Image (cartoon, rainbow, N blue to C red; front, side):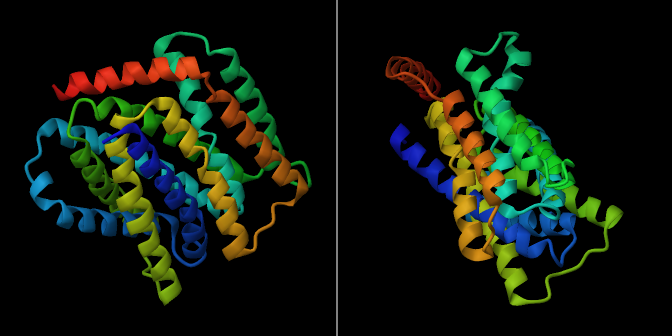
Length: 301
């Protein structure tokens, strides 16, 4: 797989994840949050297991161990996000969770013990300003929905960092699918502990659940895991920053959501900060891609 092909697939993943906020907004109105998570990951795991049965049936302990960790993080992402979606708009949730691409380099500071570059620092400052505009409501109180979306963003940043490490040690396809299985297991247990499970009662809700399962989970998370090995981290961050743009478009078309002048200005600042933090010169881009390409070749041979 070439880098261009990998980037094209990641762009379609961003479109898929952009639609997920619409599906979640539709389903969370009638179905308990953790029940939605259990249903989406269960359906996604069954479908992907059936399709790739021969390729994933023989799995080692290390892959299962890593999948269990990734599955737990996935559950954290979506429990936070589902509770956030109950108290904020789909478009606002999309822009808030897009701060993952800023949190990743920030978390890397603690891993590498190196200070961020100037562009990262400026990106964080601009995104923080945008976050304040999105989080502060008209009565100057911080919304709980926005807070939960930020927690989801933090979990998502951890998931990206962990995945980048795991895919170089185990089979990426197996990791991508089995993490869905473990997320399903954790969600089912949590559902019976903290909720009263309720199945969808109309076609629209079932449509939303299957959209989350097949488009956003089965396709999105498995393809993300597979193609991350074939492109540069800069490209991944840039393409994932497109997710809230698609979310805003879908929310406007299907849910008729309007964030207001303050909300749109905050969203523009977040997107600007994301782009600034992930911008790079042509020289740096070629150098990074050369290193990444050399690493991929070494792994193959």
